[in-house]
Amino acid sequence: MEAMLIAATDLVALLSPSRIEALADRVRGSLSAERDGNLHQLVTTPAARAALDRLIAAWRQTEISGDVLAGILVGAAYARQQAQRESSVELVWTGPTTPFVATRRTEQVLLDLIHRAQSDLFLVSFVAYDVSSVVDALNAAAARGIEVRILLETSASQGGSLSVDPVATMRRCVPSAALYVWTDRPAPFTEGRVHAKVAVADGLTAFLTSANLTGHALEKNMEAGVVISGGHVPTGLRAHLLALIETKVIRKI
Image (cartoon, rainbow, N blue to C red):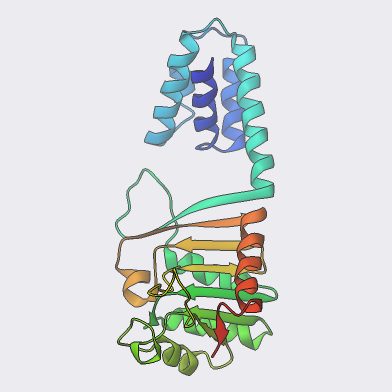
């Protein structure tokens, strides 16, 4: 039973609610050994076919009727929709892609997050340069009244670890942004670095990524991340970053 529930959960994550309804209609009134071919006609991707195969194999190990399986599928699809209304997590990938998993690129997600911001944006990156599309989006956001805050690693001359000066670069490119640094680093963070790469808009959408704000990271490197919409994670991330300002862990420069 557990294997079937897991397989059903995997399957509803790969198919639309309407496709799950169609599958449920086909299994109603049937036994596990029946209508396998009809079921496979409703899935088109390799990942979904594999999940359906696992579901059918698990179903054959039980005495559950098609009516019960239909109920499991519909219930799992409904639960997933409800969870997505509260919070959704999407894989973000830059680099070589495959036909098996649909993803959006890092630059696409970051630009979308900036464009959708309604009140405030907070970006954190180790370095920042050669990102004209992001710079344009940030300036456009600032022009429409969005409060833009950016936390960056500092250059070696300012106590940081970089030979370049991302703070100076960002000040020149996005002059209206509030720039922050982490220079007063008590033990055990004495040799610490601003190595996080995150963005949060309005406390509603958060983007966690391996990618720095650089041209290579947004276009050429193999980078991965997730964008989280809704739920407590974006709210918590925004609150944490603002608390770092309030407690003077990071300071405006």
